[in-house]
Length: 398
Ligand SMILES: Cc1cc2nc3c(=O)[nH]c(=O)nc-3n(C[C@H](O)[C@H](O)[C@H](O)COP(=O)(O)OP(=O)(O)OC[C@H]3O[C@@H](n4cnc5c(N)ncnc54)[C@H](O)[C@@H]3O)c2cc1C
Image (tube, rainbow, N blue to C red; front, side):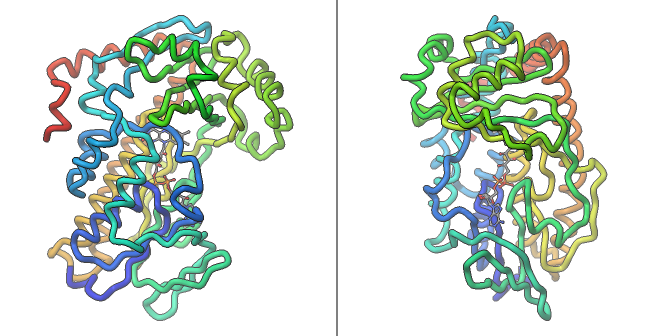
């Protein structure tokens, strides 16, 4: 990795992709700084539980030598799932089958972020750095932030998520609206506000996925006693930009749910009355054939490179695998210049994430189809058959 010697690397965004990359690069002795928009590591609720896949998210954690930290913070059984129809009838109970517990252990987003930050050299993450633009002067990149001094780097890696502001400096290809928007909610104290949910989840289940009427609703508890949910439905792209006055109070949120999801059981009502807000998140994906020529000093990882809806649970896994592959290429003795390493990473990334994005868009359509319940049950029964041979500790012990 002679080409990186005495170079300053800037990673923009302290999500799972950017932090994993910083950790892997520091293990190889690289000089890396992460610049993050959030004002501090505590400043924002970090969202729901994520499942890490053996061949991607977990592979990156193993390479980062963070499996011990992961074992301390993951949530055994968090993936055990009840699939329901909109009348709250259980269609399928997936407690131990796929071993979503074996191949796909789950961890809350906050603890994952914490373990990655704690693995970095002190002072690696500079908070309160909202990227606004860049200028290239000679071979160096001057990064500009809102209300902060510029930062000068030799290599810039954009890990600033699905609304990446860096992406346009690498490619003119824009993400495409998927046709589905999610509203996300969080309930601080699930035991007080959702006792009937917890009762239904007794027996070791942690999450419910309900589908019906071309809508989906996924909800689960988190390790801190809170619950999160996201409700997916088909609307035009600009729906999220309109003002939703009804979202301001509990009664308005509930009547929005009743209007948007007719025929859904009152079992789901407390989610909408007890969430403190509803956050609209239109879902995008990148063209399956996206491609650009490698730049000498800039690339994209994670959602910034290939945002996709969450219906295959691949987004965080692809972000962390990008980090692993990019770090491996950048630190390989094969390359004498950074551009060749970036090109090798991007070629692999284009092919891999095109396949995953197609599968994700298939699932997105399936979750919001008229016979979603039947198709989901078939899919989960297929998972169970595939993974009967795995023992509960097989993956985590490796
Ligand atoms: C409701 C929902 C549920 C999901 N569920 C799952 C799931 O179950 N499984 C799964 O694998 N994936 C899921 N995803 C997708 C997953 O969250 C993303 O794919 C993953 O977080 C991508 O990681 P990342 O590091 O690329 O980006 P992000 O996690 O988005 O991190 C980007 C970081 O960059 C920072 N940033 C943004 N803009 C700027 C800026 N201008 N300047 C500086 N910093 C900036 C952000 O604050 C953030 O810290 C879900 C997504 C949503 C919306």
